[in-house]
Image 1 (cartoon, protein in one colour):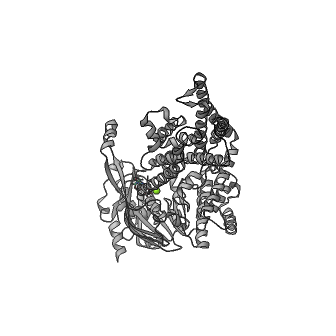
Image 2 (image 1 turned 30 degrees about the vertical axis):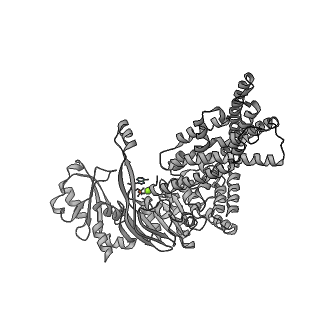
Image 3 (image 1 turned 90 degrees about the vertical axis):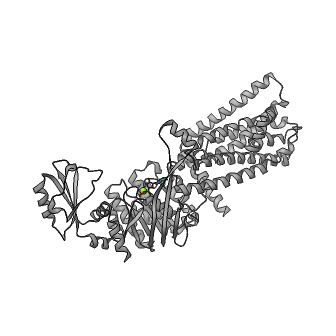
Length: 264
Length: 342
Ligand SMILES: Nc1ncnc2c1ncn2[C@@H]1O[C@H](COP(=O)(O)OP(=O)(O)O)[C@@H](O)[C@H]1O
Ligand SMILES: [Mg+2]
């Protein structure tokens, strides 16, 4: 069962990659533009820190590290789950979603596997570069265990992005297109690229327990930042990822049910 | 194979008053209108049958097919396809069915046709040997060879539809639903597609449910037709039966010099002919329907010419088109249903 889906995913990917290579120019431009975007963000942080030494007690490299985790986690979503954006206007409205319902495989899987987004690779590169730049300056020694935890944290971060987008994309089953909502919520993740301690308590709770973007960058990063005071919170990251995914998938199934009973 | 009992589908349509005020009002207080798209229909289709499912636009054909494929859950009633309830076990049902929905593609848009088929092979878990054999056969019958290397998005409508048909039958499904597969195609492609469907049925015993507006499709492919009108089945039987039942029916379309609106049926024709409702496409025509047991076509024409100046006329013979036109037009529902009961 699982191995069947792994194999299918591989085959879908292969086809998507072929299409990508067919449009080589698009691929390069997409990757470059995303990298530029990311650079702009980092440049901004750099300028701020040229004038001050610490922001609310956080050093430049610590902020850079948080930024890097956000970018890498987000790239997982961007590369593999980008199709979530298109649920309303490319699948449900034009009637293309029906096609997924008459295939003997999980419709969510089919929907996700239908697309691979090359632009996300730019974000992945930048994220890795930023993380490696910041790593040596955090005051901890990096062993195998730390690396392992880092990878787990980043994957968890990616899946939190996925769960949140899936949840709000699912609203498309009830409304014309939930894209504006998905977009608005997604933009909240920008807040999470900075230490949550710089925000008002209300915002902090919101980004921790309601729309848990805090766990996509700040909390997992804090695990590796000496004396951050959030090490224990950080350990919740994988749990939050799993719970968010379960809730989002449950909601998706509700949406699917609504769709099959209204037919639009 | 397909058993449908008292199947109903009601759509809820949100009603709102026009303009901004209406839009704001509808935010707080939504009014719904119920559209009964399918009303208590029953059908029983055996394995290997090829059935034409016909009816005017909006009659409820696609809605029925969506419930049979599991895309839609019925409001009430039940469906069993090959022992499976499609909307409850959608994935299980999906591996035994194929479908073509008019102009929507089932194939993968950006990748070449051959690779689309490769993916379908894995999705449906078709054994390699069977896949190769099937594909070879389809390529021959549908002339797909030159298309296999082209991405779907670059195909013409006719080419795409041939590829779609092959995709729908690729995993040798037990049932195939074809919702207007020939719409917009030229005659040569239609002929090819009909031949293919018949061959699939002959070779693999595939059950086929076909909706179309092209009666030629029906006459060539189906042994049986089910006619649906405004959500209700108004006829279910063999084409042969309907022909002999209504075979004496004739329809003549008259184009009059005077406006068709002022037309009054000449008295001598009153009891034995009937004026059919005007069609939307040709509102200037007056169509008379009659049985040639009661009056001959020549006599009808003669009488009409005596009373009106006729610019042109066409005689529709007892083809299935005419009969169907009759059934829709005159609302023969009661008569036909009555026949069915005993
Ligand atoms: N998703 C939907 N929501 C509301 N009404 C619908 C929907 N789909 C179809 N209808 C209505 O239901 C009726 C039957 O439609 P349909 O099954 O598509 O007919 P056909 O395929 O015979 O043309 C039509 O009046 C149509 O407007
Ligand atoms: Mg239809």
